[in-house]
Length: 197
Figure 1 (cartoon, rainbow, N blue to C red):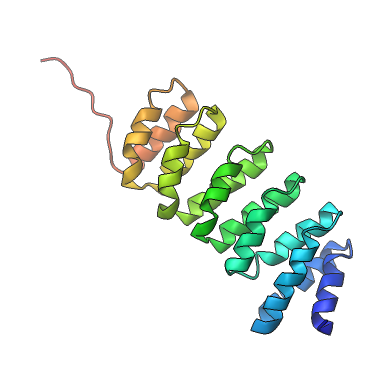
Figure 2: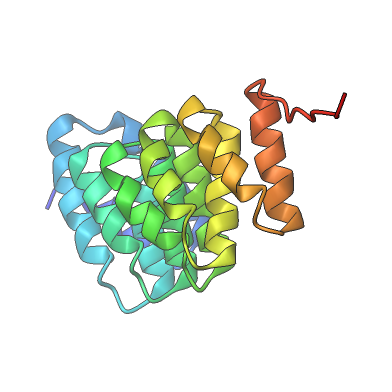
């Protein structure tokens, strides 16, 4: 193994957050070949029994954008530890690869509300490509998932979401009503009231 990469892996597995962060900050200076080798090594760390090591593996992968990194982070969204899932969602929001949209949509129903919220934030960063999946998700039977989908659609502000936001106004939920109204106002769609003559 390349000595530099060996030191990186040791730092990420050390249990010392300062050393691990310093190692991750050095990723920008790696050659293309080293980056490919490192991705493979980090994949191995994602299977480590220690939650902290898996977290740092996900944190490092997010600094090496590309199809392989996206695939590994999508896999990390299934990790048993909420902190690792949270890190994976943050990383996917940083990479902004549309191929991760379906995986992030599934995490809107994560039992850990922070993971769900971070997945919604990642989808918001992706913007328009995420809109069709979010429109479909806004029909979910889960109120929390519907709320995240509607909030994200409101923040993206894509015209295709207008019917979905109007539909959310009929849901008898103050939060859904708030985000649907915010989204419609943001897009310049007023709620017109017609008074009898």
